[in-house]
Image 1 (tube, rainbow, N blue to C red):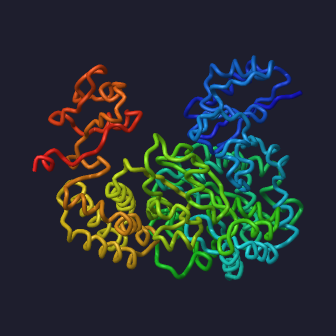
Image 2 (image 1 turned 90 degrees about the vertical axis):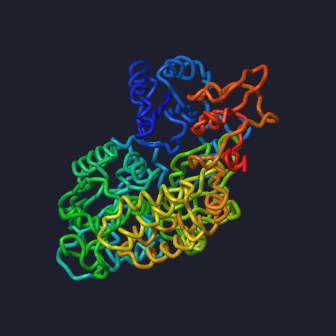
Image 3 (image 1 turned 60 degrees about the horizontal axis):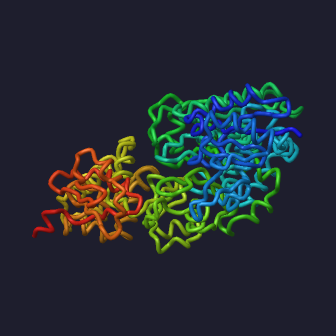
Length: 594
């Protein structure tokens, strides 16, 4: 029997030296063991991940490689302490497919991620790769567009515009030269969907792009990818080179009249270049500023020619749809939002990582079913969907199905797929300020509402979090946010106020507490809280004292501990280190004296 060991070499696992684990396994493996690398498995919080046949090892170390070969492979003994530990019941789960993080997903676009070697085109071909391209060449442009329209696929880059309709516009636009572009300028804090797919399954994106090129009549394609993604860039370039060598890219592809080539364009990290007209300007060598639409890129895009732009996930979806059919895709998800959605699940959640679920899956199932709930038994507060331009959705809407329309109804967006979970230890005002500060900094400055409006809004939030806010600030903030939203030139400004508006809608009382009571209930805003040990909960473990840099935790394990409010700097180290949530946030000392 030949055993196959797959070692994750996505960016996350590589940062934990999974390449060294691979080298050791290859060095010592016998002839009956095949050691291969893969891209991201998605289970990022558990890396480095090593899959031995169908057994998944987490947090693997170089030392573990010897045990895997000498005990697991040779004697069938499982390395128990490296199996996934379920936060719900602390049980260890052995089989890859039994882990809720995977078993509760519907992985169609991610089905090869973590299962094939992304640097080996033969692995992709063996898994059915480039069959969709062959089929698309036979179908022709009109049939391709009709299948994509029938599938109901909506762009996975943020706006959710019907992909087939978008392609039809570009197909019908007059022009001898047309272009197709992959938008891989993923700049949301905490987002890594596009990066992970490019690292783990680059050929599926190339194949989808080429199908799109046949559909609209393009002969040249560009991928605009962040230079901060060196591994994704390297693997995509390697995949393009391999596809060209095999005749999938170039002149008269697969004996047809279709010729196509791909150019890799690395972006310099401007978030606004995720907007399609700014992205086009950047490829052209200009400053990445958005422009007024119309004309839309489908009519006048790159170098003035008809251009189609789609996200990485959209092109990967097209590859799957052409292979399996529009009806199969339509059978997943909801009527208005068919198919699946890919999210980077991050923040205060036990199982963070890259996930894929059917549209219509509830937030509760994602966060508590797949994500394993909130660490340290903290209380769930909200989830922000859609990246820095998304809104915060509170606990009462946890059973909301995730799709384009329902999220919009709640004041948020689907966006490109960022999902940040926050718990009771997060200050909602500080949270809104963080994301507004991000979009304010990333504004290109071309239009006044975005350039000046986001700055003024940030100044109001800074006043509130420093204890100098006024109740009138809330009305001013709300009005300002709506002006920015309705008058900004591009999507960055139009969605930048979403974190502010949604938190004002659902968490207004926290804003009022900051202003009226001078208190931050989460214990985040400096000078607006104090910390006390709850002796009914405290187990006298002394972790709070050991974590305090300022020697403000007094006492011992026999007599108990207290926090000296006169020297406490409010750094929260004791709060974070307490294993039983025995330290409570209280009003500032001066308020208690009053």
